[in-house]
Picture 1 (cartoon, rainbow, N blue to C red):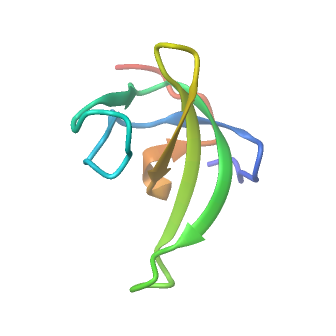
Picture 2: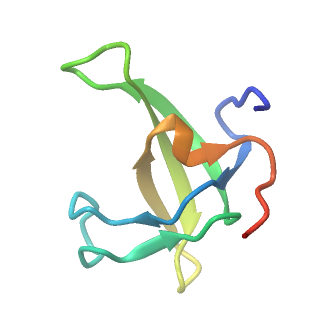
Length: 84
């Protein structure tokens, strides 16, 4: 995988849905299908497990607004992903 930094384009490797933690969107709302491009906004980790990295990614919603979604590192890639 290509190393990624804040501001880089990232691509969903799986379908990313709202687990209920993103306000303003219904639970199970689909933010990205595999291959959808987003932008890495920030990185962090779980408070309970500092070794578990988290990525804050902005995907564009149907209205053209950025939807900020927390992703696990295996849910996005710095390399374009082809849909299967």
